[in-house]
Amino acid sequence: MKGDTIPDQHHVARLCDNKHIDGGFIQATAFMLRSGEESLSVNWLEFLNCSCRESEIDELRNTYSRKLKLGAKAKIAVLTVGEVREKALTESPDRQILKSSMIPNTEQ
Image 1 (cartoon, rainbow, N blue to C red):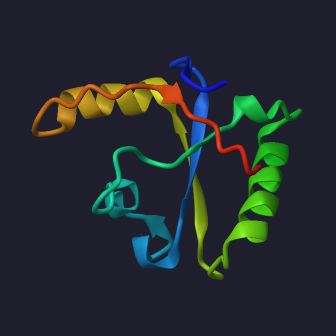
Image 2: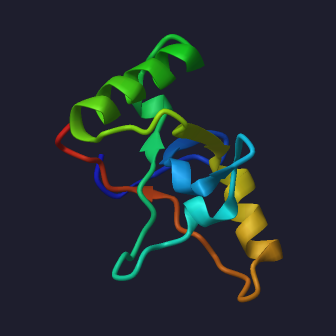
């Protein structure tokens, strides 16, 4: 629930629209905060409690399609929380320490 910590071994997914895809590959710009944003919008896959990754992705596609107009080339990036936290800490210019707390979208 709100404020729960997402375990490092769990996964989050982010919808990446066409403008952040080049040659079929998701670009780093898909993970940058927009002006005025304080956090990145992702979905906690294990929170969905589905039987497999394919079911989780199907569930997300259904949720996204009800709320958004998805471009034909839009992709869903799946990331391991711990790997993202480690990359940000070791490779970002400011050695960013990412929090992994979840604020669930109550509209789902």
